[in-house]
Length: 254
Image (cartoon, rainbow, N blue to C red):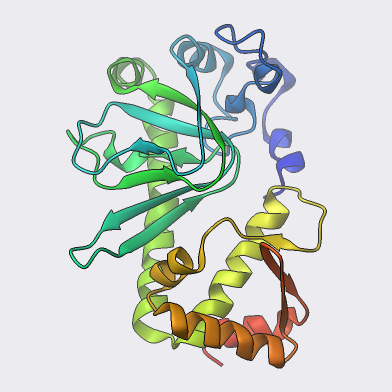
C-alpha cells in the first residue's frame, strides 16, 4: 500500500503527532506509529502509551541490530533504510528470510514471546529505527488488547511471506526465483513512493544469491539471461524493469 494512502483509515484525532522523546528530530515530527500498517489505526490512548517508551537509534551499514541467540530485548520499527533478517548456516552462508525496507515495518515481532532472538538482523544501508523494550511492551499488551492484535497481523504477514519463500525455493528454478525477487523489489519500490524508474539494490550479489537459494554464478547467469532477453537492464546499484509482464510470467512458473 503506498505510504501516502495509509492515513485514510483512521481519524485525524488518532494522530500521535511528534514524539515527545525526540522533539528535536526532523524524522520524529510525525510519529512512525502514524504511518505503520500495524499501529496507524490504534486509538490515541494506545499510541500515547507506546510513544512513552519509544526509543530512537541509528545504525551504520553492516551494523547488527541484534544477534541470533542473544536475549530478546526489543521490538524494532523501521523508520528508514533497509534491514536483512537471516539465519546463519553451518557452511558460512546466510538464509535471508526477511527484508525490512518500508517505513513502519516491524522487526523481531516473532521474538516478542521468546526468550532469545531467533535470527540476526543487520543493516544493509544506514538505518534509523524506533524500538520498544520488551518489558514495557508486555506491560502495554496486558492493558491494551489492540496491541497484540497488531502484532499478530504483523506475524501473519511474515508467515505468509515465509510460505511464499518456501514455495519459491522448493518449486521454482533459478530464473523464476530471480524474477520473483525483482517483482518484490519493484513492489516495495512503489510502496516506498520512490519516483526513480531504477530499482536500487542494497544487497550484494552474494546476499541476493543466499536469499533466493542459488550460487552466485547461477544468479549472475540468470541476470544476464534476463538482460539479453530485454526483460531487465542492469544499472549501477540496481535494475531497471523493461518487460514486467514477462517477469510476472516467469515468476508464476511459466
